[in-house]
Image (cartoon, rainbow, N blue to C red; front, side, top):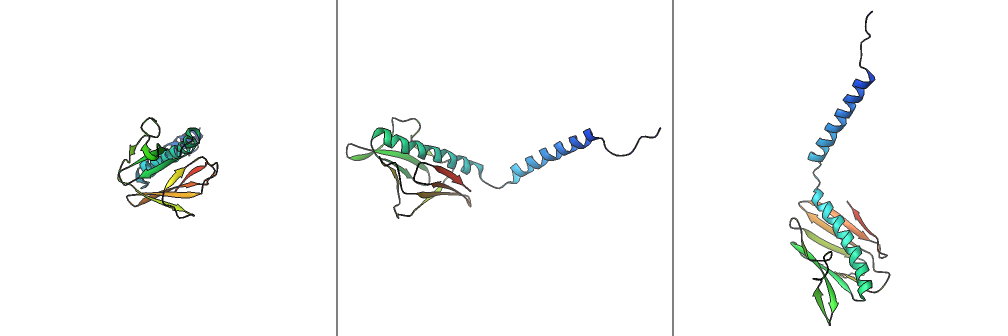
Length: 148
C-alpha cells in the first residue's frame, strides 16, 4: 500500500511552533525600542503614585526632582525641601543611562508636586533617551499610565 504524500498534523504543529519561536527571538533582538527606558518609565509611574499617597499620609507636600543623571523625591519639612532619605522606595535613584525629562502641564508649572489635595492638575512626563521616547500621563486623580 502506498503512503499518501504530505505532512502530518503533528509535523505542521511542530513547524508552526518553531517558526513562532524564531519570530519572537528576531522581534526581541531587532525591536529597536529601548526596553530599559520603558522599564524605568513603569517604575517611575509607580513611584509617582506612591509619592502622591505618601504626601497625603504624611500631611506634607512631596516634590519630584530630576536631571539627566538621576531623580529624587523631596518633602517639605521644617520650612524647606528635604531629601526623602528615610523611605526606601522614594529614595534618590540614578537613571540607567542619561535621560532627558520633559514635563507638560496645562497650568504651565514645571515641577511635579503632590500635596494634601485629592485632585491634582493633570500632567505628562516625557522621558527621552537615544532617540526613543516614553510618556507617563497622570490624570490628576492618582492614575499614572505609561504611553509609548
